[in-house]
Length: 242
Image (cartoon, rainbow, N blue to C red; front, side):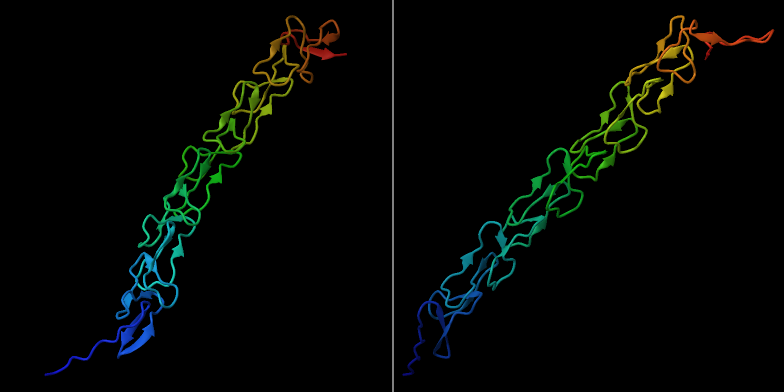
């Protein structure tokens, strides 16, 4: 009668090979003192003599068997499963390290790349109507101070003739600014504007407005009317200072 040789049984954390006991290798576990098993994806064994593998914590991953460590999910990625590779955040979303989900950028912020790790504030002079596209320059006649989804229209009596403006200019005295996209228009003869920030000029009501003093009216009593030659006239309210 043949006697089957007995199998050497080692302590837990060890395995048997040719009737010798060996410590369980990193990335493996030895639950019964006989066999050595590889750690499955999503688990790891960082040292020797492991009787079981450690499950990766949330925000960490191990995408292959026999891992000796679980890696932290990197910036710009999310790790919903412990046993899969990190997934890049969509455009308009971001994530720091160790995240299981990505976060959408707030209004007035944006991320225009895959795998973004930081939402950027919409810069002054630009608008960010959506969180997933690069900033757009403010059109002429509008402005922004930063962090805006849409540029502001210049208020009445103000203007800007530049793209991506950060503020609007007050219409200067002696001018009118009806359209915020156009340069100030000088008051015509017979009209004036003494204050900044107006859309129209005022009538002089019988007084004169000289060409070089459009911010105030000059009385024709104080000014000298143009001496016309015979057969010629000049426009009404045309005066020349003495």
